[in-house]
Structures are given as C-alpha cells and as structure tokens.
Length: 382
Ligand code: TRP
Image (cartoon, rainbow, N blue to C red; front, side):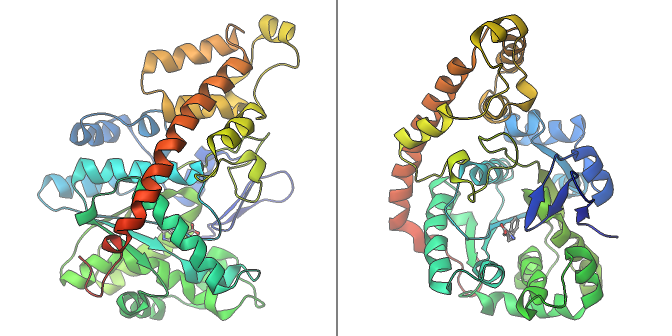
C-alpha cells in the first residue's frame, strides 16, 4: 500500500518531508490504516495520568495503532518504552513542542522510559544546503528545548544518530536486510536520483523502536507519539518487527499544528507565521498580533456576523492546547461565532500566555546547558 498521499492539484500531500493542502484527517487515517482514538482509550490514559490532557481531549492526538494492546500489556504488568524524535534542520517552534509536551505527559503517566532520536543524519542527507556542522549546531540548540520540557532525567535518553550509530547499527542492519528497495520506493516515493543514504535511512529511524528489546534481550513494547506524517516509517517498522522477533511498535498520532498564516502547518520555512522557542517575547507578540484569524474584515461585520473559529489559528491554540476547562473552550467558540469576542482580544490573550511561556522556557533552556550530558545516550542504553 502506498502511504504517501499525493493526489494532484489542490489536494493533500502528506509525506515525512512534505505536507500540503487541506488535510482530511479521517481520510488520512483510513488510507494509512490507523484507528481513531476512542473515548474508552482516552479514559484509560486519563486514569493513569490523573487528568486528560487537552491535546488528547480535544483530539489533537486523534489516531493510533495498537494503543489498546500497549495499555492491555501495561495493565498486565508489562511496561513499555516511549520513542519520539526530531530532525534538527532548524530552530524548534511551538508546533514541535506540543508533541513533546504530550510525550512528557505520557512519560509521567506511565513512568515510562523515553528514547528521543535526533536524526542529524537524515537532515544532512535531505538538505544539501547544510553542512554537518550546521546540522549539529541546530541539534545542540534543539536538545536544549527537549531538556527544557522537564523530561525525567533517569528515564530519558537522547539518541544523536551520528554519534550513537554504534548503538543503532546492529538493529538497523537487521531491519535493512528485511526491507527491499521497491518497498521504500513505494512508501516514501524515492526516485532513482535520490542519494543512497536516504534510502537506507528508514532502517535508522526504525531502530530505536527495537532498541530496548535488543539491549535487554527480551521483548519490550514501544509506543511512538508523533505527527501523522511520520507514519510511513512506522509501517515499515511494523512490517519487519515480527520477522525479527520484536514486538510491533504502537503509535499515537497527532494532527499538524497550524502556523499563524492563512493555511499550512507551522513551519520554520515561514518564520513570520511561526513562533520559535528562542523568539523574544516582543517578537512573539508581534507575530501573534499580525496573525491571520477567522474574523471578518471590519469591526461592524464581526459584531454582526461573528467569526469562524474553525479556520482560525489563534482559536486553534486556545482550544487544542491551552484551555483545559471544557466550559471555557466551548464558550470561546460560541463567543467567536456570535461576535461577542473580537480578534484583537483573542490575539492579545494568546500573546500574553505565549510571552509568559517563552520567558519560562528560555530560562529552562539556559539551565539545560548544565545537565545536557546526563540526557545523552551511552553505549548501553539506560
Ligand atoms: N524524521 C523525524 C523528523 O524529521 C525525526 C524522528 C526520528 C522522529 N525518530 C522519530 C519523529 C520518532 C517522531 C518519532 O522530524
């Protein structure tokens, strides 16, 4: 089955390296063969965590594979490891942080170990404009953002691919031997002209899913929180798992976080619509105050006709990320629709929260410089 959706003009394109067009998540889930998260699953997670994270409650994390299996095993005394990652091709923005914040929620809820992969190799291979040194500078900065989120020091290992290749290579080789070129070509849309490094790379991204099992010499389940565009990797990983005697990794998938512009996901390539974790509070405020909204062109129209929260990035961040109180979230949607709340007010509100977050995050980022090495993977895992 082809996992990259590419349907011609005006339609959605979803690959690990490109996301375009209006995304129909139900269709994506159907075509990728994943399952929509049920209320029952959500409650099972909430029970362990003590609360339902707004990202889960409001459906930003919307789909999964084998989450039920992972939870069943956990209930029977079999802990799982978490695995997520980042391709360090630029500075981190708030869209990236959201997935990681959710990963920390899972880590805390299940007291789980986490492997966090930094794919310096992948980004070097697919970005001809960067040297490896440049990628490593991004990576160092990105690692500070990861650590700043407060992952459990004893239970988190950051894998940096180039340095840690010795820990990954055996597993990656075993994976690579089971995946032929026609499969990766179909799944990722590789072309004859693509470099040979990137063709092998899927084996490297698969490896951390099996690393704990390989190191411990017994089967350890793995759950991968990631945006849905990474799914092609996991399908390959799952295909080879049984052939290698490893458990199939489970996934929990998020939707994409919108940028502050008219459409599209938050992306470093459009810096004016993207809040970087290193933006000064003033810059972030300016970006938010200039954001596209679902509002009307004039104040009169807005009061008369109301706004459209469903196309508004400002509302999106309030609703999906920030407002844990259901009543408040529903009320904001209503107030927007009826024109009771105006865009300026919403933007100001979000700008204030963002500024407060950035000040704190940037302080933690600085602190992270002192304990960076404790998070980095050593030869034998934990
Ligand atoms: N390929 C991912 C990226 O470009 C990085 C990555 C590696 C990743 N392993 C992962 C992302 C596991 C999510 C989960 O960003």
